[in-house]
Image 1 (cartoon, one colour):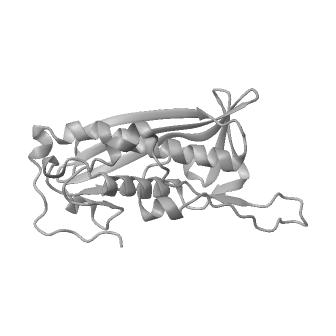
Image 2 (image 1 turned 90 degrees about the vertical axis):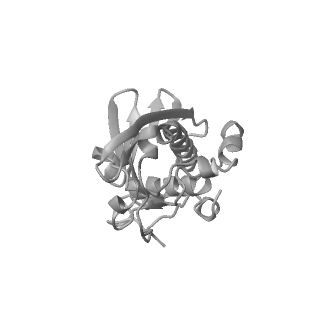
Image 3 (image 1 turned 180 degrees about the vertical axis):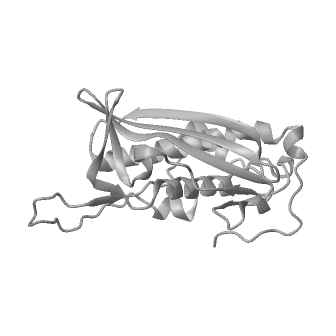
Length: 227
């Protein structure tokens, strides 16, 4: 899809163990923007509507990652309720930033508004709209001998000038990971995160095409975004 989708492959590297090798080496991973399945790829590549999109740009603020999801370690769950995080397996980039950057890439490839989407701009309220995301699930799930990847993201679009919510939605996806290895789990989490963000974007499109969203006026001066 974009330069980042090609370059931001799963990152894995180890640092020397501490205390004379008694601790396992630290491993760092990163979510990547993954190719969409065929059922969604055709929709993505149609360009997104052009002149029919609402006027204005959209600011994507870093996702909220509460509790263990924001602590930097990769989260796992056993069954339905027992949760933990790996002491030596960590995200190379904070989860709120990774998801925000992925959202920006998806919105650049298939716009949600006529003006560009920008992740983490200095002044989000200088844009017509603000996209806010929340991590509900982003983890490995162990059910007996089977390993799954699970992603659930909530999102909402607000009108920037008064912070009124124009749309909100949720997307939850899960997938069996037969290999059960950490690189395979990260690959699955990347693919599910990409699909969840795209599904949320598609759900938001109808709301932004409505009369309440159409009444939003674009800023007189286009704000500068992240390089």
